[in-house]
Length: 189
Image (cartoon, rainbow, N blue to C red; front, side, top):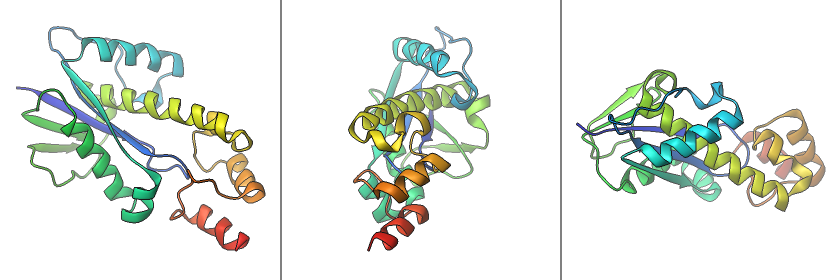
């Protein structure tokens, strides 16, 4: 039975896309040290991501852009990113295990698992790939918008990010539907 693990990164940030990954691991090539991406150092995540990309039977990424997040809301955008990741897999799974408490309405046999990113290897692998991909995007965006500190906070609403938002306003990669960004836009207007 082919089992795909799916997880997303970037629901909470004020900026950037939400990124999901889908991974079907190869039972013949186990990967040691898989865990919730948030519990791993950036260096360990990078190492594991390379191993996952090499050893997995299939893996893919899906994303929903800022405009989509603002238009359909973050939960629906997360489900859209998950759908895109699943559809991009080179082989289709018999079962999809998703980190969290709800599944998107998709034509797969699905199971939502709270805390699955720490307990289910396929979901851990997806968590790692999604985090590595999204973090790299935010580091790249930091070069484009250096005054915001994206490389450090990855778009989350830290004190430094909120201060930069107030000082410099919102960028095209900020989520206008999120309250702190909406408040800055209202002040600037």
